[in-house]
Image 1 (cartoon, one colour):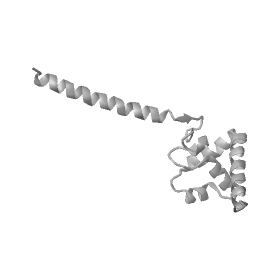
Image 2: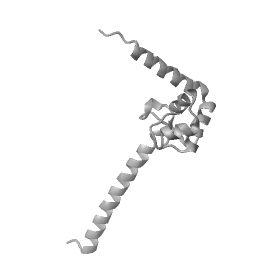
Image 3: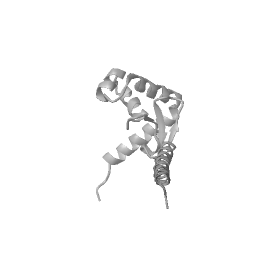
Image 4: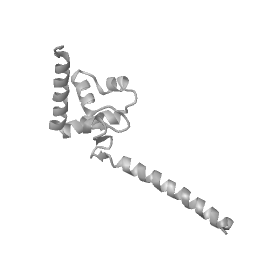
Length: 123
């Protein structure tokens, strides 16, 4: 016959097992992201196909670069995307300058996709 202490131990073990499972899920989810040398930038195959993204947002580095090419200042970008901080905007620009070829490829692919969409022939 189980004692009250044994029942309590079994319940606590079940709770611990559930906590371990929840932690394992968090660790597995976190491993889907690749940390970069830039504190505000990460990549994940689950987010924009691996395109560098500003942490805590769905805004890509490419988006920030393209806004600056349109003539937007960092403060104008902040007004357009109030979720961002100035540090995130500048880190995105720093990432771009450290990874020119990579980001230029994303920009070109985006422009080509827009061109195909605009010039799509209806069938």
